Image 1 (cartoon, rainbow, N blue to C red):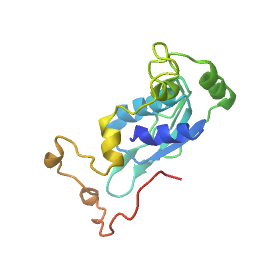
Image 2 (tube, helix red, strand yellow; image 1 turned 60 degrees about the vertical axis):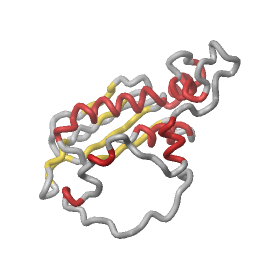
Image 3 (cartoon, rainbow, N blue to C red; image 1 turned 30 degrees about the vertical axis):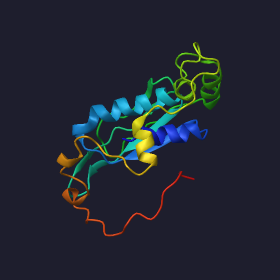
Image 4 (cartoon, rainbow, N blue to C red; image 1 turned 90 degrees about the vertical axis):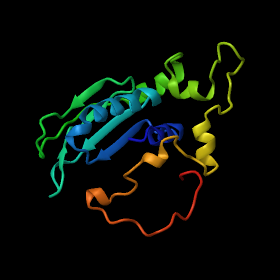
Length: 171
């Protein structure tokens, strides 16, 4: 549930984002509203699928959905059946149109041109501390010392031994 991934895809021009997951029922509401917010905040269609059934350890919830660029759910599989298939007709041309003609709700444009009604061209700097810290390799949460789960071992995934090798933009 990283909204930055959807933002990056939209920033590079994606009009439709495919999202896959294996979430369990406790995050059902978060699954729904993040699919919708990814669509609306980036003016893109989101087509999201979530594994359904058991992997032997966890029971995943299913619930594929397609959200239109305005955040409207246009297809939703909520039966919890592993063989459920949903379909939806989407229109990338409407995504392109919204990105070109929407004003106040053109969220992805607004991010890079904040206050364009007050400042010619808008403010284009980056006022967000977390972005500066992440880029500088010093990202640190105020509550980080209390975080107890820092790898996948609680879900049966072996602790990683490989060290991170690189940084920079995703290509």
